[in-house]
Length: 171
Image (tube, rainbow, N blue to C red):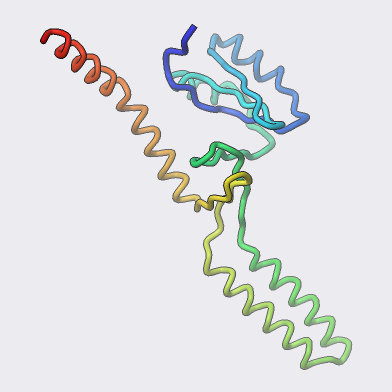
């Protein structure tokens, strides 16, 4: 039996997650659902028209998963490392100063702050674990917005296509 409308992923479960409760919640609510295993991740898909209902029914997950717009694999947070460098530099520089190596400690602290400043030039975002693509949060929101607009236009596109076919058949 073909699937009538486009499916969207509403949840992806990392290995070891118990998913029976979520499946039962959606089944009891009469929501069509489809599961798909990708690597070690189990994905839960529903038709676009039932997405909002499914997300309201499902409990908030205790894990974060964002799909890559390029290859649909898992995106990982690629945060700014500047805070880590400043903290490590301050700790090491402070320890060196306390040990009597004032020049070395100050050099380490200044080096850490300079490195942190250069790292802040790149915005934090998401990096794909499969294809290596990098997206800022703003880019991901733009992509999701564009996809939702395409879904809104889908009935019009199907109507136009069917009208074109009927005109062609009359000739």
